Length: 106
Image (cartoon, rainbow, N blue to C red; front, side):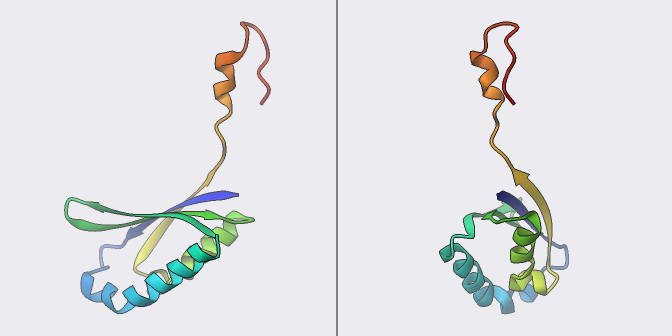
C-alpha cells in the first residue's frame, strides 16, 4: 500500500529546537529509504518559512506507515504534525475508452 504523509512543522518548531535533531533525523530517513519503506521524500517551504516534508511510504497498513513517520526524531520531539493519505491507482481513465452506455469495470 502506498501512503502519502504530509509533515508540517509546528509553529513552535524554531531552527533552534530543530537543530539538535537534524543529524538523527537524516539518519533515520536514510535508513527507511534504504530499506525500501520510504519511496519518495520532498522538502517544502512557504514564504521563506520552514514548511515540512512530503513522504511517500510503501507499507502493509496505514498504521505501519504512520508509525514509521512518528518514529522520526523530529516527530518524537513533537515538532511536527502529520496528514496521512492512502494513494490508490486512478482507474477512471478507462471511461475514455468505453463505448457510450458500456459499463466501466471498477
